[in-house]
Length: 142
Image (tube, rainbow, N blue to C red; front, top):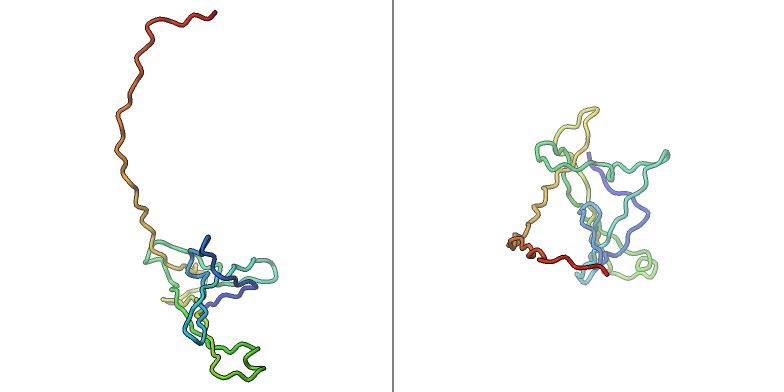
């Protein structure tokens, strides 16, 4: 089984808020070798349409995963270059795809294995709790 994304929106990757899920990124390579990263938005699931690529679940248990993330490189020539008959203007786009790694039986949940990120916690030295000395005389309200 091979699942690929279907989307209505592909936007340039924002350096302020980059996509963290590799399933939502594609890379465009220009004829001169430069690359640009793009984010693929998920499609809404409704009664008329469901893109299986975006509803594959994620697991942190390697033995439960039955789907693996790969990529497919697809060459294309922009319509403007074709119309103007510009040669040597072939671009490529690297698209994420999910491929099954084991036999999928009827009723099996599709799960993509992602290693759990280890969060490194900094160990701060705690200062001992210091209590103020009690006041010897009560303040008079006046």
